[in-house]
Length: 265
Image 1 (cartoon, rainbow, N blue to C red):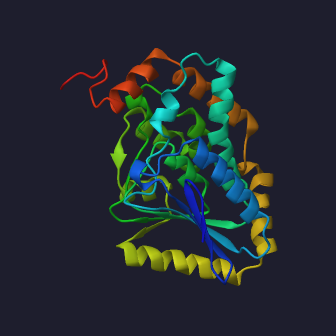
Image 2: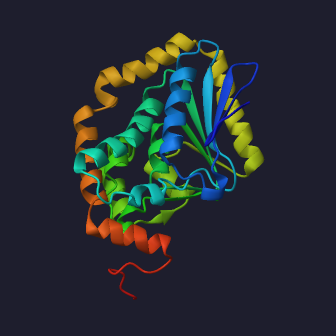
């Protein structure tokens, strides 16, 4: 096993690589160090002929709580160009997952929130334990989900995206499956592992070149990365991340208080 600061990487004798988000004390929130380590790991594993599939999982009680808000709040004194470069790093992680020539299997448990849904949307196979919770929570902290919109919209469509994003609805695996965000629901941890293993075996039985070719085919048919879509989404992320609303919303969350716009029903 390779131990990094924010991820763990392990490759078994069959060539199944497991990449585990490893900030359990922060609910595996994505920070700049994790972005850099994920990008490096995906580039290396994607180019390794001995690797046949990649399992993406989270250590601890949840898969991933999204972007680290301490990182996202740190825009004071930064220019729009600097914030754009900073946010683009997260976007590059999603693109790397989507473009990886290996089958990527998302093993989801506990919770997948906000930016974590970008990772889920980019996995080839997404399997969640039955009590996993999901949420596009950005509007609660004054943000528009610009970066992940470019990956979620093609996956679940505008109708589901508006429903889930405008209300920051907390939803479970039934809705996640109906929306097309996940592919399978596991009864418990043992069933989750068994389902992940079944897809690993499918990858081991298939031609690596054909898997890579199939993923490239999807992109060539117009369902791959859309630069214009991503650039527009990034622009919205930067604009709202630098806004007074975002600073208020993120601050309220970190300070465990209500944001100024919350009205008690």
